[in-house]
Image 1 (tube, rainbow, N blue to C red):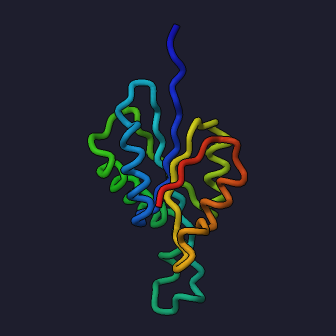
Image 2 (image 1 turned 90 degrees about the horizontal axis):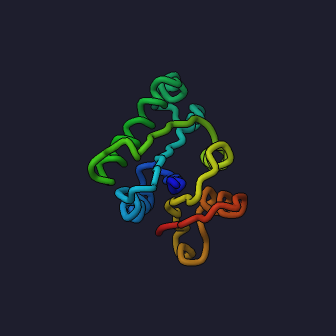
Length: 145
């Protein structure tokens, strides 16, 4: 009887904490019964706050997808050799909501994500995205600082 593959979701955004989460995920990537998905969520910027930036480029779905794909590619490099056990996905929207949707759709066994520190309180509080995910899933969550 074939053993069920363990499904792991690793959320990535290119930040230092995200890279640390990838280093933790690396421990699982070469295990035989593991299927790993890297997820990045791109969010359009509100152009009224960025007067000097080309506003149409900030909200262009193709440009956002390209930026997300770049994060996925960099993340795969951190994991080491890429193989068919690693899947990359780019979603557009609110990061916490999209992570929750992805987990609901794919029923992961483990979510690995970085936590964004909050200055002097970084040892006490989690970032808003990791906090929301942690409090809205029954899936095991590994938060890396």
